Image (cartoon, rainbow, N blue to C red):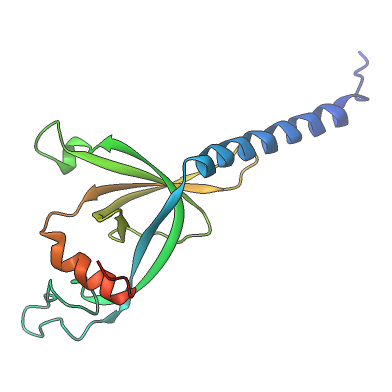
Length: 166
């Protein structure tokens, strides 16, 4: 039995080009629907001065950490978003809408980080690394739910930090 391997390299190169085009196509779709919002990363190793020594609770109105209890870093990110429903483990009814964000890998997102999207405040509860056909991770799917609090003071403090008057 003779096997002809002469076309194998051509076939491999064609498949490689196809997978690269697939990833580029997905990233182009995400880019076309993307817009700017803000990501707040918590630096868990640095505690804010607002944290009460007795209770270990942060001041929810703190203008430095925005009530997270940790030092924060704020990034303006370019990502796409889509409304979705929260899984039943995170809600008590069928009507609470959450958002999934499609965030390029260059932005580091962690559980319990916060996303500010057009004056709406979302808490990150799940991050899924999306692996391309060639084995790279071009973007993460970041699932969020609305923060359950009165966001007026939070947003005022947030905009004061980024020097944006509202």
